[in-house]
Structures are given as C-alpha cells and as structure tokens.
Image (cartoon, rainbow, N blue to C red; front, side):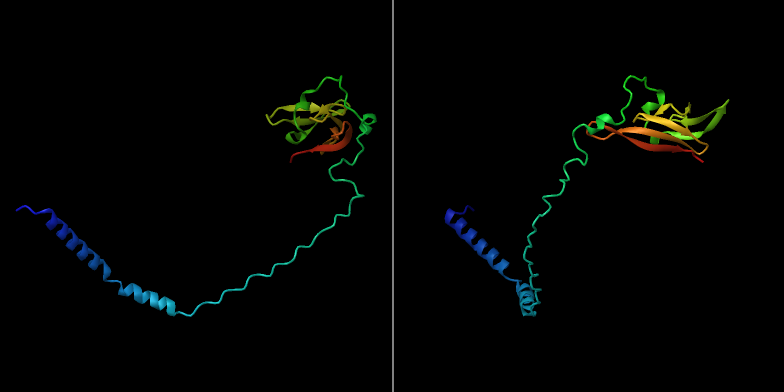
Length: 172
C-alpha cells in the first residue's frame, strides 16, 4: 500500500508531537534540586581590601656619585701603575686558570725549593719564584711547604691594572 504525501506529512507531525511530549517529563527531580539550592541561606562575602594611597618618593641623591660611573677616574690613571710585560714569552702554566691548578708538594734541588703544580690532566710541573702562572700574568713570589704565593696583574676595566695576591695551597 502506497501512502500519499498528505499521509506522510500527518504521520511526521504525529511522530514529532510524541517525541516532544516524551522529552518534557522527568524533570521534577531537577526542579526540586534547584528549589533546595535557592532555599539555602547566602554566604557572607569578605569585604574588599583597603587600597593604600601611593606614596611618592623624592630622589635627593643628585649630588652623590652615579652608580653607573666607575669609582676611578677615566683619565688613564692606571697607565702609570703596574703593567704586564708584553715582550716576555709566555710560560706553559699561563694558559690555565689558577683555580684549576693544584699544589702537589715541594722539591728541593741544591739551594732552590720548587713547588710542584699539578694540572687537571695529571701532569706535574716545577715552579720557583719568578716563574709565571695563571691567566692574569701571575708571578710566583714565594714557595713554602704549605702554599705557592702568586701576585697577579688584573685589568681594572679602564685601561690600567692592579696587583692581586693569590695562592695555591697544598692538597692534603
């Protein structure tokens, strides 16, 4: 049996009405929960914090030295101070930073006492007062049984140099 187009339309409308009425039921538990939530007493909201007024600051250090200007004058004052010898040949231990070297002991030969310096690769080197060591033109000034004292020429950043004392202590 073949249905006409009006019968199809009528059956479609009937089916839609059944579906819509089926979706409308079963919401009583949701409405009950909403009523319970609305019946609860409201909580207290904390007040907003007080905003403190901004206090201005007047900078009154105009007459003091600027922290962005070096302490020392920039007029090449370091030119008259100590300077490394540019013409002297570099010694082997000058390629290592002092903190990477270790004192392994001392050795005496005749009237001279030498310090034994160990590099990170495990090699031992003899040094005596007058030898150069470290990356800042460090010159060995004394060798004692406990340490090797060094005097370095460190750049001051404005063209000059200053002397700095350092030491390599004996490892126990």
